[in-house]
Length: 410
Image 1 (cartoon, rainbow, N blue to C red):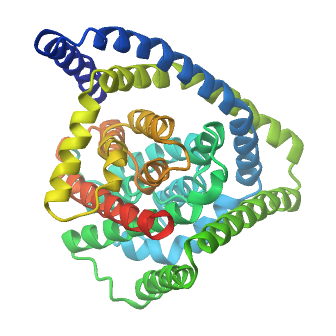
Image 2 (cartoon, one colour):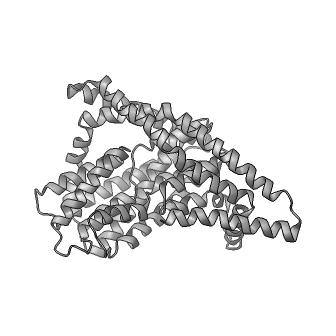
């Protein structure tokens, strides 16, 4: 519903601004430019979607091998001690614990198709424990904040888009996204724990979160010892080594489980083709809307206004061109994806704005969409502090993304 209003607003605002430019400035080129943008944006959307088919098929095939090889179950066992502390209201040994673990692990691996059904199952089981059926419980809110904070180890789709749009090293945003999404998730856990009065100073959580913070600090310190060129080379090399290790690891996991690795890969690869076809209308819709908005001059007015405000406050405004992706992400995944593609198309995939838009896209998830779908599935009307915690995690992710982008690419 929100995306519907935004999409309509793109066209109405663009039309009004174009009329003003025509009547008061005599700009006779604005309407032809807007119409040209509809055709060129539609063509771009189709070409991008078509080009995604092969890479999506590859990665979804690899992910299916990992899924059948039991990788998600390994994550579930590793996360078990931590999650029992974050969900103190869930009885020990309750089946919902397994569903939560599986959902979070699937999200971390980028298995969106597997994560959503597992998440809905977890919500149904949490609702069984709920004594006030129309009100969100603490466990529901913590679970959804972990989802909305967008912790992802493998940002496959973003790297695919970068490859499709001509990035020299599509994986160079791997480490920056990993760092940004870590800060988003950490902020979400801390804020939600504060609301729910969960003690984060227990041994298990201190070791886990503290260890993760030390690891991230070590990564940042290590990269700080390098110049920009070395940083880019090392970051890209580490990303490629990790990704190839994951591919081989998933295949080995499948072999250990005596899975027919080839058949599992083919099963997942088929989903890649259907996914690429399925996103065509969404990408066409959002890119045409953005194209018209940009061709009318409205996007330049918005960005120039924000840039002017930032400069007046004494800040560096290089990041402003990527802000539409960050502002759209809590509302719509497809909308933010369109903004990211538009930023890379307009400024270049390897530009600062292009890279930052990718980091924005990977640092958080679609907060309002996730809350609407998951709460709606169990008829929750009163969401309590879920929206506030989700948006604060998003804000932390945005701030972290900007800082990390300047650190790596500024």
